[in-house]
Every structure is written in structure tokens, then in C-alpha cells.
Length: 86
Image 1 (tube, one colour):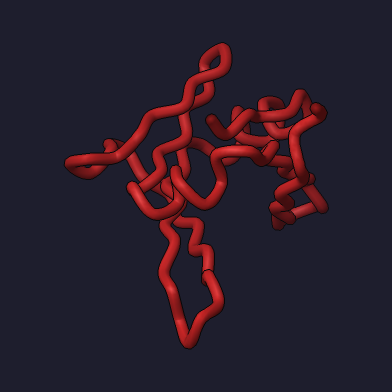
Image 2 (cartoon, rainbow, N blue to C red; image 1 turned 60 degrees about the vertical axis):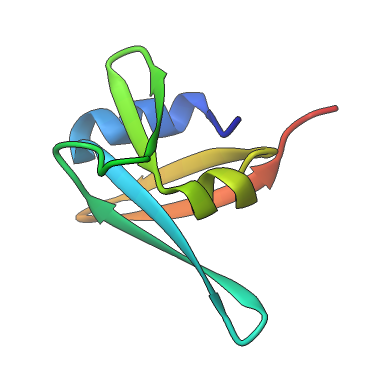
């Protein structure tokens, strides 16, 4: 299951709830991240403290062994995905 790192918890507290989707485009996986207030039907909901992240089925599968990082830079955010520690 996708994990959320400490810095991401703080950043998402400012940003709000997000929904992550994944799509296969010409053999590569494209990840999209959008603001969301509610999960869509079939979404997996990841919670850590007061932070919630919604993942469509494809994103939940692709990101199952990843850790979400979110880094605030002034008026915008950078998202990263790293492998979970063994």
C-alpha cells in the first residue's frame, strides 16, 4: 500500500486532499495528481493523521510499494515517489 512520508503529511495539510490516477500511455505509466474532495467509486483511500489520498485502481496497483513525498516550494508543490524500505 502507498505510504505517505512526514513532509508530505505537512504539505498535504496545506494543500488538501488529492486524487492520484494512473494511465498506460504507449507502454509507459502516466501519473496524474488532482485536488479532490471525495473519492471516486472504486478508489483506495490512504489516510495518515488528518491527511487523505485517493487512488484509482490503476494508481493503487502501480504505487503499491512506493512512498509519496510532497515538498512545498513557495506557491507550488513537488510530488515524488520513492521505493519503500525493505
